[in-house]
Image 1 (cartoon, rainbow, N blue to C red):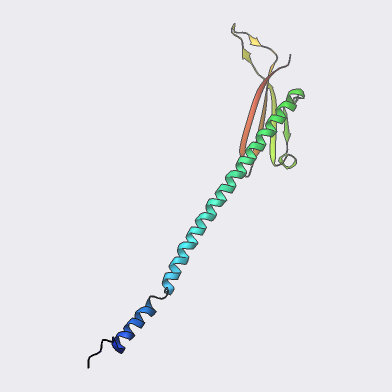
Image 2 (cartoon, helix red, strand yellow):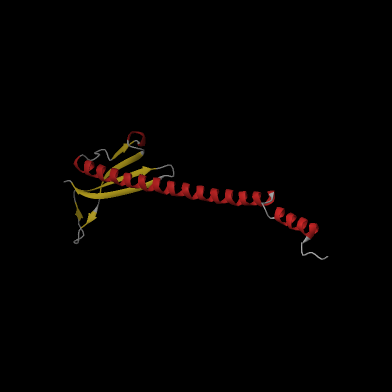
Length: 141
């Protein structure tokens, strides 16, 4: 009598197939962890670069505010000895150098215009030595 049942031998092969495809090998898991670690490292580096750029932009904006403030203050009270420095430790991490020197300006007829002074303010900030500067001409006879 003939039966249509697969038999014991086929049952063992099907069972072994099912066991082989049920999970990942240790090598596959290690490769996946390596790829994940490289991706996380790349994201961490990108995040650090973004934070550094934001900090530099903040320091540059603060330096511009300090320059504007020092220009307006120095216009009313210029450094008469020619130079004034403000230490970075006392000024929110921004060092300021103000210079006040006479500027020679030639008029159209070739003569010098007397009483013109150049006030220059330089702000230094950050660990990488960023600089911002501004200058203005002042008439002081």
